[in-house]
Amino acid sequence: MTIVLIAIALYLLATVLLVTGVRQQPPRQSRVWLLPAVAGVLLHALAHLIAWHQAGGADLHFYAALSLVGLGMAALTALVGAGGRMAALGVIVFPLAALTLFGYQHHGHIIAERLDWRLQLHAWFALLAYATLAIAALLAVMLWLQERALRRREFHQWLRALPPLVELETLLFRTIAVGFVLLTATLLTGVLFVESLFAQHLVHKTVLSVLSWLVFGGLLLGRWRYGWRGGTAVRWTLTAMALLVLAFFGSKFVLELVLGRPA
Image (cartoon, rainbow, N blue to C red; front, side):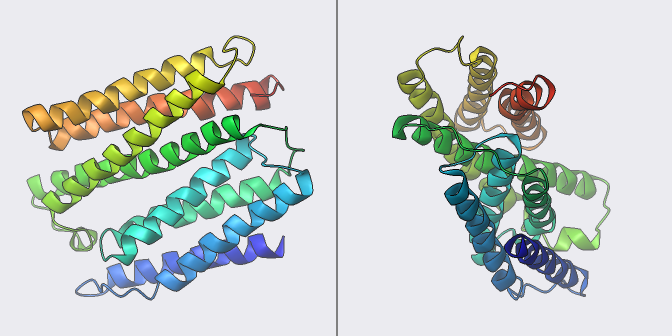
């Protein structure tokens, strides 16, 4: 519990430092937030490792999976922000990671179900894909807000903390491309290693995940072939991410928390 509280405090400290930098005139691009953010990520990971050791394996129930996605988002934000790009994303991601970790700790840990290495590989690809594409969804929202503010000539202070519009858009599509590769690996390992879709309540997950994969793939194709950008990119990204959230967390919520079945 102490590790969890320290990790949450470090995430919130990193958030405060980022907000302080954004509020300065002009916004300060200091990286003082990076140390508590990285420390928070490491302690977040350590909390899971300790829980898995006590449970006898990787715990991937609803709150554990949610916390792992939060961990992945925080790690990606620290990695990208360390390069001087999109550190402001941490204002959203770090409190979100702290909240998911708190939820995991508060709702306890479940004895892990034994999974062979193939299913574990499938699960890790899925969690990495969700974390990466969740970052892409946040970038899409920021892109929409930035375009909206510029059209209305509303030059808010937070706008100065974001990279130029073109750079933000480039980062969005690069993130989507990485997430698309991970999602492809998730679907391929699922086809190869999951024996019975019907017995494991995975049909709805598979259908929604494939639909999300098609939307993300269509967006990347449209970007390459037709130069899609702006509002089109935002709509496609958020639609695909909504399908992905329904595929994984929506189904896990219903099966585990509503029906009381393993997902």
